[in-house]
Length: 96
Image (cartoon, rainbow, N blue to C red; front, side):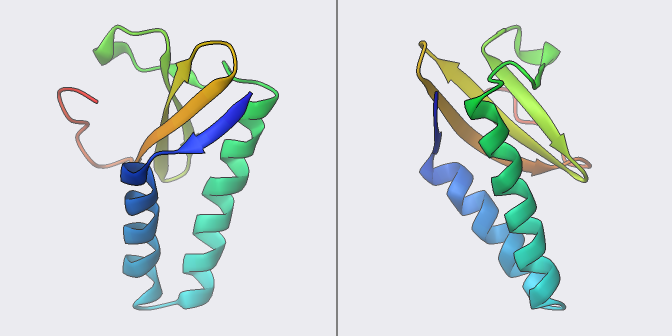
């Protein structure tokens, strides 16, 4: 499996970094590293995330990387798209 971060997910990650780095650049780097490292587990365990019930799509899943939700989509047998990273307190959009 190959994990691909979509431009939107990369923008979310950059926004998270920028927000945290205003106060603590070290913690911002640590948070981004934690999120990207966690996405790497999907290479070996693509279904390790839980389905997001509100979307009724078994290929749309999430990993909880407290306090964030890393949203990804299984595409075929060899590609995983990371499509978004949301703070756990945020409301998810109606569609992804």
